[in-house]
Length: 86
Image 1 (cartoon, rainbow, N blue to C red):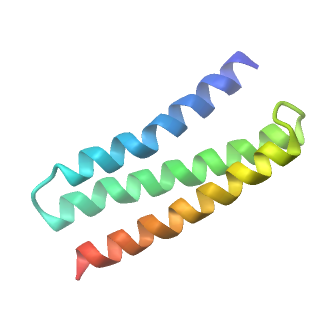
Image 2 (image 1 turned 180 degrees about the vertical axis):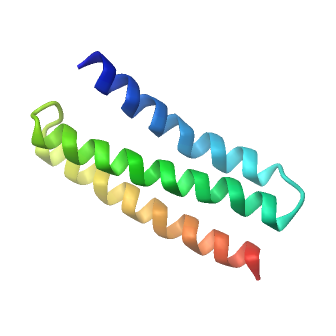
């Protein structure tokens, strides 16, 4: 359980950290590189939430709400990447 919790924490912290780091970069290419990493971490977190719910570590309702939020965040990151890439 502790390893699972640690992995969820790491991927969850990776999302805003990579967004912040990317937005401090000067070129669009660099910004997007970190935003893609943030999007990948968001997908990793979503998968961990699904697994956590399946194995009973996370209540289904809590996991479902958080999974929805990660999907929305992924969409927002796609929009931001597209805008920066223009």
